[in-house]
Image: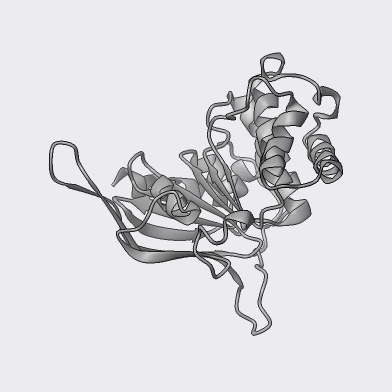
Length: 272
């Protein structure tokens, strides 16, 4: 990070319910997850974790490998069942709310025999969306990620960054109210990752989906998040509210002294 200064940040405001409290899109309530180890014994992946994802919020989980952040995401997705506690999405169980959920992985997971357009349409086909609506949504989101000239290209004809853009368009096209994203830019080179981060923020700002986002990259967390939850040893060690105004310039924020201080503080927590 550099030392340039930027405009004084202002606090981020979150959507509120009619009662004035922030509306909740997803929640973990006192969740523990324990796994049996093959050689015997128990691994505790989450230890009485409670958190809320507010509607329209971009909530980021950070932590070292094995700290529980991806397990928390998978409990919200209904892919991992808690040993104790409960998860809810829009007031329902994750399984009951599946139509309102989208999940994006670190790897693009594109089907190699389908074009970019056909890959984006795939999830819509599974949900029974009619052909005209599938085409409309697919072309809309491919255009939003600047791939309108590559709709007929197959994955082998696309760069890694373009493939991840297709995956992003596929996730957005489902019109899910809650998006779960597990290090979606981690496999990209630095320049492509920065471009995709900016692209993601631009698309997110248009629709304000509720997003839970896992990353190891502290700069990425500070650039993207409204709030950051720092995971250590299966628990949430600290919450940070990211105060910078939107729309954000990623390069300016990483040069901001306040962002640099937040980076160092999170890094020190993880080092301990």
